[in-house]
Amino acid sequence: MKTRVEISGIDTASLPTLKHTEAMELLKRAQNGDKAAHERFVTANLRLVLSIVQRFYGRKQSADDIFQVGCVGLIKAMKNFNTDYNLRFSTYAVPMIIGEIRRFLRDSSALRVSRSIRDRAYKALQVRHDLETTGNKEATCEEIAACMDLPVREVTYALDAISDPVSLYDPVYHDGDETVMVMDQISDARYDSDRWLGNIAVDEAMRRLPERERRILLLRFYEGKTQMEVSEEVGISQAQVSRLEKSAIKQLHDDIK
Image (cartoon, rainbow, N blue to C red; front, side):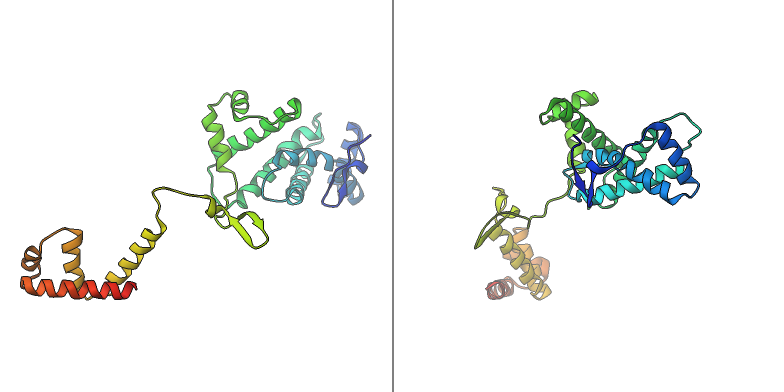
């Protein structure tokens, strides 16, 4: 009994199968412009596309979109396959389909990843798929790395590099009136939002001060100089420095409030 999988509105259990000689004859006719042969050959090879698409499950892009891109790769392989060689079509088509899907995933990614890391990640995905198919359990990074003869950290880094970024505003829990977002689950002892916002307010208020008053406060509280040292540097009396300092601090308080 055939396994029924429906994707892009196609019931794969109803797809026809072709013998090698029949497939080559159909392909020759399709390459010569026979539309009926073209359609039948494509239909008969959709199961091949589906088997490749399954390697890329888990991406943010929908399986239907990846399947349709895989079909583009299938058609390109049909156009370029040389029937004079005694090769199975799938041997040539599989790399073409995978390449088309990889380009689609790369171009639609929000982040740019180097080709070497991307290729390593896709190889790791393929190895993971093979391990899980044969072992009937989730493959670990250690197992994948062992099969690829690579350090675990390189496999982990490559897989992380092609993972879709998560927005801080993505919801992780929703309970009627309250929604918990990713940012609500992140904490850092070094981060104090009140202090951070306060620093922004002080910076903005400092920019609104006259240049001389701003310079006096910078010398006094950022560089730690005395009023006498400031008076010598600015060129005014110590009494004037004291008066301007108090006035500037009052203006800062008023602006921040």
